[in-house]
Length: 222
Length: 222
Image (cartoon, rainbow over all chains, first blue to last red; front, top):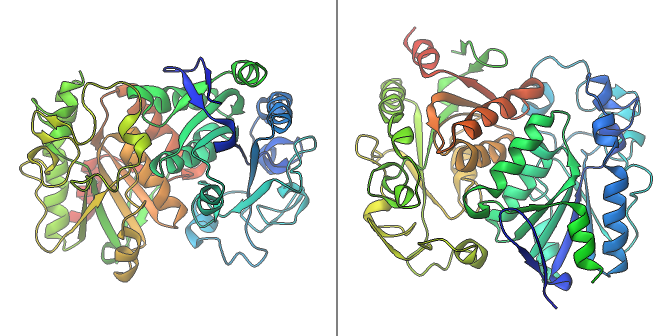
């Protein structure tokens, strides 16, 4: 059964068994006070505020039996999957692999690298550790989605203009029809979030669609 | 010899033999009056105005002996490399493969798909036809660059927030140090260009650097 919901720039239509919910990088180090993101001077309360909305959509999606994908920006402990340019650029207070407030920065298995409480992946869901901003680069995400016949992706997560936008652009090039849930994504910079929503929906949904969580939840509850 | 130039958010340093100039999609259908872009209602004079600047940088780069890469958004005539989502989305006046004012839209070999006069690739330069917005998706660009020991990329071309940004984000994930030439890139939407320049340089050059053409030319002329 195809579902249609009011979206920008026009209605978004999807068939739930062929659609995955993709939750980008809802990790403690980016979202919790005392984590890596806050240590860089970012106001993490902006990101914290979307957690209940992400959770509500996740619960409705699970109840509808839809596929869920969680991603984490995570490097191997030996940093073998971290390009030198990513580690050495600029003069940050903390580099990837350094000891941060919640363990080694962006290293898999460290406390800060985990998904925040309330959004933990279930055992039957996909969990993708990605070395880049984009969820398709150097991961098996595309193959996993193709194996399951997925053609549509609904995105949530952080941050809007970095990992979410990059992943959505990669997905669009690979032929997926993508929806971004407007109030279930956030940035440390509100102007970048607004610009990203405008860019992806411009020129007839050149990258994809956006809609509020309430519209998506309502469409799944009919 | 490593060259350093004043850039945003801090100096950009590159070694010319390990750096490629990447010119994104300077194609007649996007830039010339009477082409596909204008037929969609876009003001192509914005894009036309950067052609002399792109050419000046290209000439200086060639004189310095640097590698040049040109890309085109181009599909095979049978559209076998065009995802259905890309062709069928929305309700445009012209779809990919339809007969447009300068030949079939986004099809390789058609007049409108060519690079604009003055920026034609030379025989010793790389010409990459890409089916997506990103220059790395479904092309051999990364392999070609790796074979030549390229670690740094200098981007020019159109449009800033679509194909240029997508390609720069892909390049960044692959470990390249990327510079975008501010006045050698343009968008149909000036606010999207400004937002993209701000986004890519934020958070300590999270995607890369930007600088004006004059600074790059000066750095190569020392």
